Amino acid sequence: MIRKLKYHEIDFEKYTHCLENSQQRKYSATKSFLDITTDKKWELLVYNDYEAIMPIPYITKMGFKLVINPKLCQQLGIFSSKDDVQINDLFLDFAEKNYRIWYYAFNDVNRFSRDLKQRKNYLIYPENYESVRQRYSPKRKRKLRLDDEVLRNSEVKELNFKKIEKFITENSIGAKDDHDRNKFLKIFSDLGKANLIKFVAFIYKKKIINALAVYSDQNTIALLGTFNDKNYVKLSGSSVLIDHTIFKNIESKIFDFEGSEIPSVEEFFTGFRPVLKTYSVIQRSKQELIKGFFKLNHKKIILYSKVEPNFLSALS
Image 1 (tube, rainbow, N blue to C red):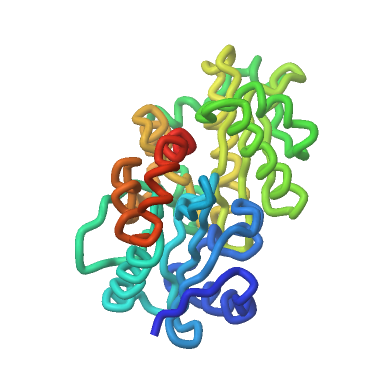
Image 2: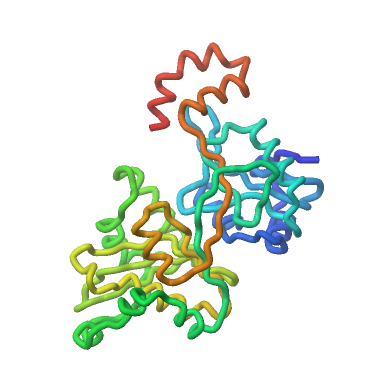
């Protein structure tokens, strides 16, 4: 009933048809987005003849395959014409029995018969811009009222990745180290080359002080990154950029804030009065992953015991 397909075995025409006609459709599950963010390291679970699909991204550590959502990919999950708890349960059980799952995020439509950990995301659905803006919090509206001096000396401008790469590099937060930061930069660059992402900058006195990385397709605008010069935080350039992007797109596209577990970022997003949408995740610690190796690979226990110290180091 459910089959596991390697990348080269996927019928991408059927995959795309299922995804684009699904109740749960997410831009992050499109072939183009997944190919770039995973470097084509993803497989697929298929129900019958592509009646439902579940993409499975992975990385390899010490020769072991671990399932983990790639960078900039908030939600994946199960996609079908109508969300079905029984079918979702089948996928969930199959995935847990056949993969070592480190972190996997389902989409905000998927429902299951058992409780899973929930995370938050925020969306603004297509609507007239004036109606959307009227719902902004008083604080957010205040932040958008720039004084005359700032208005005279600032502009919002779309830039290509090369022109904004230095600013993003200098103002990135969240990356563990230079290697991690370079991975983000490569994904941004590749998405830019594929015309899947735009970089919008707030320029004050001819200097970039804020920037957004925004994914765009026919259905969705998604906020993949915000970058701010801390010396100009009082100018509220990020608020201006998000409002500008909403203004340009909200009549026909969903605006996806991509959520955050950081309280200050969450407070910033909720000032635009989006709709809260929770989604289910499977998240395991290093210790839980180790226990999983014994269950999935009884024949490799001896080999595993020899590499465990290095494997623990690789997970850090």
